Image 1 (cartoon, rainbow over the protein chains, first blue to last red):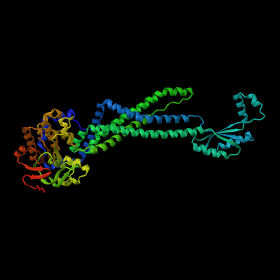
Image 2 (image 1 turned 135 degrees about the vertical axis):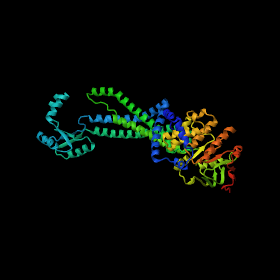
Image 3 (image 1 turned 135 degrees about the horizontal axis):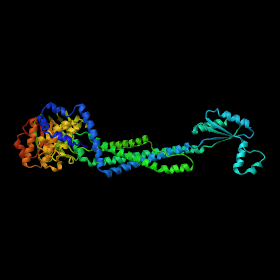
Image 4 (image 1 turned 90 degrees about the vertical axis):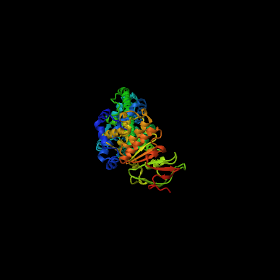
Length: 347
Length: 227
């Protein structure tokens, strides 16, 4: 909390000459100097302010490191609390990635009326290709489809015995985008076309999936808020204990004219170090978890002949995680110290 | 330099620590404040350094009416006053040097000036050789002198001392008092609360006497009005 002087500086001061220089200006001598001395020049105070910042930062860091076990516990608690929502968010992102990999996820099947000939169907397909919401249109010829069905189903003889082809011509329309709104709009548009007997959207599962992802994101957001609050409270509690341990020191500093800000500064840095450490632990935990899952996920993906790979936190995101930990630390320390320091007054 | 106008202080438990105190202490004066324990000496000092606010009346220090000082201005006010406490109030885990340097760090002095001034203050109280010691390893008298060095290192206008010789033997007490008189000689206004009447009477300075919160004697009769 209070600056300690380096050995080198002590040596410098112990030369006789400097002491004598001090003695030449007796204490409380010169009235003008006395009055000035209680408020130093702005520039000098600015330098002193910066010095006290670096001093507080270094002092509080060494105090945190002096209790490695207690500090490590705090870092671990904060790290876990930060890693949990981060991991969930990563899981959601990967699911989203995965859903994007399904081929033609939203498809609309247009079953045309029985009397439609192949020429009409071809013309209709051609017409549909000019629609802005349509990416591709595939025409499935009814004769072709019957042959495929007969070969694929093993019901060849039964199908051969049918008096006529029961299958209609089919147009498979792929929308230009997967968004539910666009698919809905396209469906309405397609219903207006002639010769359309039945219209089936293949992608209702996708809408449900999107809705579930939306819900998942809300849950993660809520969980994040709750856990961030927990982080702030844990830190606030740690800082409160620190304040209680230094009660006498704070009183003495206030007695000799230390402001609340002067007392608060090293405590804010203590919070910053705890938060920063917690953020680093969280980033490491997330990294370890994604590394551990990388192999199994790859194996699973290749079993489905997919090249899907789990996507962890990038450098930028990890940095953001560490910084948000530091921010929470600062916030917790601020809340705790402004609540307590004000109430610690010399009595 | 210090003036009280009809100042009363009643604590929350209903105890009247000070009743209608009026007094003036001039610049560069050295004044003793005496009375039995519980007579209100400490309360009077605490009002000057704003550890308490008066219930009624007005305290003025160095031309500043203290009741007009907001909370944020209290630290600056305290920096203009040096205080010596009976129980020293030193930071036990910091060296003598760091203890004395504290007010200068708070005020924002340069390192070079801090080293110079702390050296001068410790030299004055005769503890230059012990600057790296921890207060715990010092005797009571030495700890008191560290407290004095800390009180004067910022060259305050006013020096307050609450029972500075409380637990010291007569010889050490006389030495401590001599220090205060030296500071007074170079222009510091000094107010010493003490019940050591034998010592005070030798020193021939104005003595204010409190009894049950009232000012019963204003020393030389200068500018003390007790209602």
